[in-house]
Image 1 (cartoon, rainbow, N blue to C red):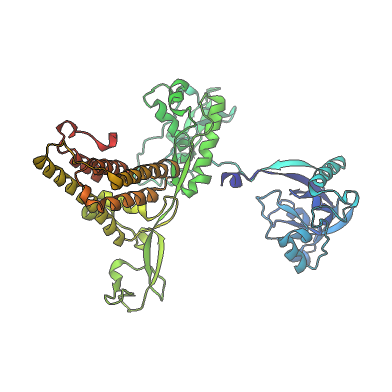
Image 2: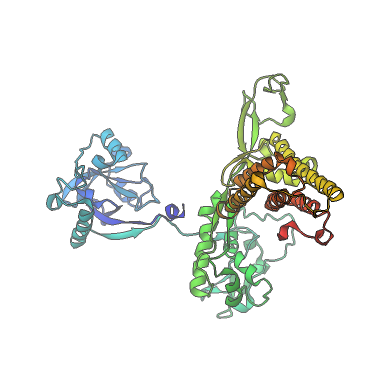
Length: 543
């Protein structure tokens, strides 16, 4: 994903001369071997050369601008068009149209009745390409680039889609840009001894802090005015603050040296935490994969090169979590989102209707939002079912990277599953107590045979699959499904209650449940140790 966002492309810059521009038009292409098939050049409407081009076009013809550019292959001419499909931020904002070998160019050429010249055969060799005819495309790409360089009409080029990161914000909160602007010296960095630059105190609670009409700091003259640290003359602080991404792009490094009051971090302390490739896992929304994560990588690589940070990558693994969706209801006539008290549910068939009109509503699953009235209050769920049930539903309903459709009816299923596990523990403890009064064979009744062996295999199979799901793939729904399979198997082995194999299986089940339903697992683990006084304070999370 980041590779596509950074957009590294290796290709050729080709220069096309025009009679009306002082400088050639530059086109970037990764397929210079198709140069002999060019039928037109297209510019983005925002191209920087457009004003100069329009100056040579009669006013009546400007809506259909058509100049001519010299085609470098043999000084022939091809038309120049403005085209909305050419984007100003991609490449140079100009493209060469090769309709025989590009579907989009073919549509454009057909609409304008332009010629189509085939220059690549089905086996990938060049045809109708002058001195390059018969060459494989890859070889022709290199040789054509060298030929254009000899003519001073092209060169090899690597370009990126990545653009500058604008870090300044016109608002009060944030870190002030540590620069002082001096009329005599120009921009001067704030000396280290004066860092950090602190925000001024707020004296007017009604002040607009959002930057309407400029930065709020620019209106605080008592803070803005200062002396130049270089010449001592009157100067002004920079009144912009830094984007919060600047701070959050390196905060994780601070955790490795959090008690240091002198510097943000030291190499020796960071090395203990970061030598294995950075933070173990980065969890965030998919939008972070091309914003915050990209900035973090940039900052960390810089700090690794210049400030001895022991890793050049901030995070070892990315988990992009999906959205939780809630059911929305819209009025069929206005498509307005309806509040819960504005709908009715038919008890006979479950049809949802608008209360005011009795019309069937438009139902959809959408991202939870107050404005859509489809949110849920976690406190209400915890009061009715407990936090563990809510956790299990979220983890079991879908993989963490997928969208999740929230349906409270599913809570009952998770609640019943936990109750079944409680039933297994209670019945096992009852069997243990009964065995203790009727036999002297030790804590557990005797077991053996094929059923006990099969149970051991099932337990170790579950351990393997749950471990992989939790630690390698983060497939929490798979982990829960494996635990459900194990609990169902135990539910069919009531005659093994009180046995060592059954006890071991229950112990494994509860320990594996701990990261998924920690509160219930803790209580279940304590219940399993009820007749072992030395273990009553044992914690399942230490197992």
